[in-house]
Image 1 (tube, rainbow, N blue to C red):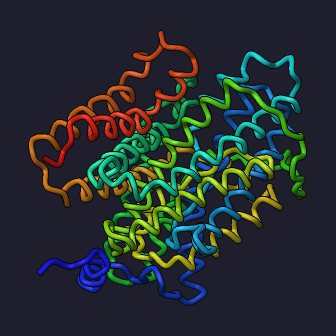
Image 2 (tube, one colour; image 1 turned 90 degrees about the horizontal axis):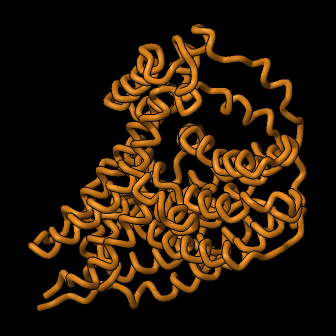
Length: 460
């Protein structure tokens, strides 16, 4: 006797094994929710503010404009996270999914507008936000079509994407452990890969591992934040933290929707629209990993409804970000690793995270405390978290029947995705728009996985 998909969901859910302290629908006590929320905040803060900083530097924006864009990125991320976790009708996945400024759009936006400095700062920003808003419906449309693409975006494909996300992020974490890109141009104790940098990162990593292995749930939940505090304090006594930089940070930021107006650029629109499509695939993979970690189904109608709501929210939140003078948002993969490490998957923790982000957007000097944190401190923590993201992708792949055709899909996807990550210059002769889009191993690996899945046809 065969079971329907709904019956399969009902059967699988109660027996799915997890070691979570709090499940998705649990309501943790205030103190524990705040602890968990702060750890997520520490994991995402730098990631949220980095894209506006990179874009501002590439397009030569003023300090005032850069500061405003950073604050708006935090505000947009806070509102988007609340929508994603709270779920409003069909919008949102109802999981502890944190949204933040996406790194995927940096290359396309900077390549499209780097040579248009004569337009003026306000005109460039108007065009950027206009393009981001105009292209956001791509993700909304994809969300409605997901249920018709089961043979294209299979669990194997999403597993490949999740694994590529984790592996790509590990590269970012390793660079932070070595001291970051800025350390590559200095000498002495703070040079890239120095014993001091690696030692500081190792101190944080080992501290988190030790604390996370302790049975006490409070210590386990706070392992990330305690590990970062240990590294932060150690860096202070090493003389690596300069609080005098806080003097240049403003006191308060007031949101101004459509501050720069709206413009449009066709070439940028095409590139951004394609990235929105790729982002929807990444979101699919992130929600799959989040569901697996949270003990939820990763197949069937319940899962598909979550994915559709999450991808729809991704598109709507990116449009909202454009209204608030921020860049497109996407679900952050690193928080999936944090859920696994802390054992807290309650979506209600997302409400606290959203509140923290909104508060930080109003008081930029608070965020400055995190921005002066030495990179090895954050690198030591994110290295472990990003590793667990990759491990989650491997678990999704391992849950499938791996036959000869599946091996071929895995081989070509990882070969192309990791190839671009390891040798980025392979695309140096391509047009700037193409190289900007496919310079990411996540994008390349994801696109190749989809195409290979269709061409090779895993199912006989």
